[in-house]
Amino acid sequence: MINSLSPRGKWVLKNISGNRILDIGFAGSDNEPDSLFQKIIANSPDKYVAGVDVNSKKVTRLNRKNTFVGDGKKLSFKDSSFDCVILAEVLEHQTEVEPFIKEGFRVLKKNGVFLITTPNPYGLFRWLKHFLFVKNLSTKKNTKEFL
Image: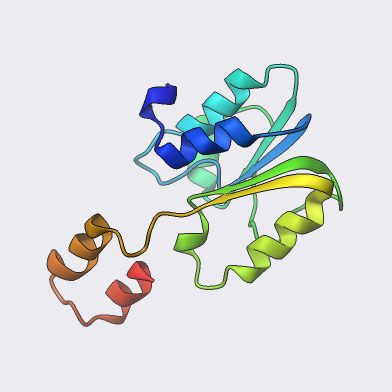
């Protein structure tokens, strides 16, 4: 399963720290497996690993232990609840990233580890996807999805 992870996913696995771990946006899109979350659980059998995602259908379908439907902008956990908070491949899908970062820091214990990854917005694949292979290049939706 680790071989199916991106280099950023492998980096997250190497840098997880502590006994209480929260993965915000763990479920991913509808057509992708939750590979990173599964690997975190497999690598941390004696740790509390929780996941939060706004995609209620996917969270229900996955039916993983300690996973919750919720918005990363307003987490239902107490302050300083986790040793490690993960925002892997989430922020690039948001128009406002500050609430996610503030909430992540709110639930993170002092001296905890906050792991954030995003793809390169200027990578060749993203340029091709959003500017060469679209029906209407100038649509607001296309620009918003790219940004």
